[in-house]
Length: 335
Image 1 (cartoon, rainbow, N blue to C red):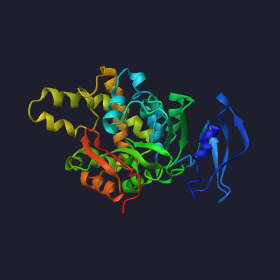
Image 2 (cartoon, one colour):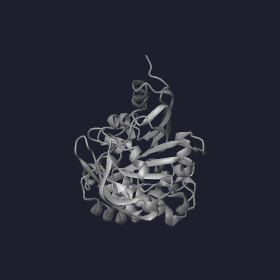
Image 3 (cartoon, helix red, strand yellow):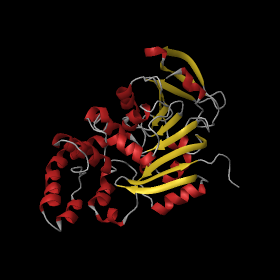
Image 4 (cartoon, helix red, strand yellow):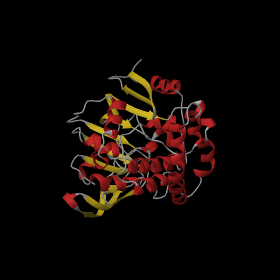
């Protein structure tokens, strides 16, 4: 942890300032490798382990994501897969410029750091957090970058001061929160007046409820992540060719039947060789069936969130990933 991060941190319980207690162990580049953050107000303590301040219990509702990203640390990272898939999604969703020098940006839910890579390349100072142990994978992927701060924290209890970020983005995360609306609202306090917010979230559609995915999740979301991953790695290589055959070789009805095969399908969507398509399919199939929560919302509901929050200049659209939305926090309170 960089000592400068302390200026941004607050206790997630009482919102009081934190201080760095003793003993502390310094590591690479003078960063704090291990230590304690304590709150003088409520006397709670938060450990620093492996350079990362930890504000949540080791075991939590996001355990499946730790399993996911430890097994696929670089699958979706552009520099590793040789594509611009993540970069394209980031800029299509946010609409932000590719240079953000001098700006402070918050990434809510970083996983292994696929979007972290893109945000860092803009020249911003980036604070990224994740609820799961995937935060350690993000550290492995990006190291102790000079402009990167990492936290393990809960989106509904963000341990950061209010109004200090120029931009906040949250991609691929909200649908996996127990209460999507509450998680969305938690993104607003860290954003300064005049700052930009970008999110995406799964859309609620009728199709979801008539596919095996919805019904299988009633069982798979309760399985041990390690057991489910073993199951997925067995069924995807067998079912993916069937899904491909239905979609590509069976005229007419095939394009409807293939959605009944419960595996993720990327052929034609991403410029990847067959081996990587299989790897992505395993990753995304596990991602479909493992999270404890998968809460979807309607387009109108997202618009309602933005209006109720007093955000301005907002746009709401649809992509294959779901609903995307960008807005600005007004320069001064409305009313």
